Image (cartoon, rainbow, N blue to C red):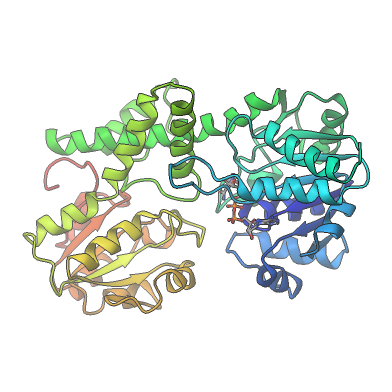
Length: 443
Ligand code: NAD
């Protein structure tokens, strides 16, 4: 099958690489010339485990190529995936300018039937807008070509994107066209052999499914953070509570970890966008608004703990920070809790010595020569000359550090853990004072 992907970000590049890997003939198009240049030279512009060899292998096999030429892109694929960004607008709603720009490009360049598949996360009703944009460009050209619009939201997780795409829990396809349905079935057939993972529905329901999924996951996190904050005040341990409730199969153990707030390119913007959609149809989405409010507050919890420890005087303090990415196994720092923390620390006059296994270049790109920021080459280097240690991301390599040397090197033997990586007794034994999230006394 000939396939075109618009957008070579986390979703577009993974989609393109995985579709090529099962034998499809894929071209990826991006307006960012620098990105396409890098990809053509064999450089992967993002960090995603396992992505590089798949891209290389399929480029060499002639099944995956890259272009900035919209005409070439539209000419190539019978299926045209839209996988461009949908960042939040000023009012929190999803900014659809990139999605509609691609739809117009397709309308301007297509010369035969095309299936336009929206993989970007978009508000309910976007399918109609995409359809109208393609149609209006065809009208301008005086053409009456047939096309179908499909909503096919993506559920991959950064850090595990390849396996999520290759072995999806479900493939949601929203369409009212039998022809498009069969073409999508064929496209995804290689990922669907073990059992039928395809769930067909109407376009609006597919669009809402993506927001509902992310909003549900964000709700679980904010709920646990609320209970964690209560635990602290009540002298209970959220980790015991987590195990206690997770054992109920109606609740389950998945995704109920408390922490210093969720970030990333999806949960914050998708919860906001859904709340905004609710407002636009005169519905007061109380729960969604609360999920966001709890998260915004949670991103300040670590700072409050540090500030409280230093009795409000952070001037000149040196904070070692482990973990900058919004979660492990990615270099993505969009809406990361580490950013809220660092920015608050700098405002209070503290210095940050930061280390992340993959997000150092991204930190440099975002903050450049920011005063009060020193990038450390290793987690050990970040500790040198620091007063206390703070952890923002649960990278594997932070899970079993040398507590004795942490205690020896810090000027104050204190660890603030935004991800509850350790057992308090472990740190206690090494003479470290431990502040985690929602862990009873001493918080
Ligand atoms: P991204 O910002 O990493 O990449 C978007 C890419 O689209 C950029 O390279 C940009 O240059 C390109 N682009 C913009 N306009 C274009 C145009 N007219 N033609 C071609 N390319 C264009 O975004 P992402 O993280 O891959 O997310 C893409 C969409 O998928 C978003 O709607 C997002 O909400 C959704 N999504 C993301 C994830 C995730 O984990 N990142 C998961 C599921 C869904």
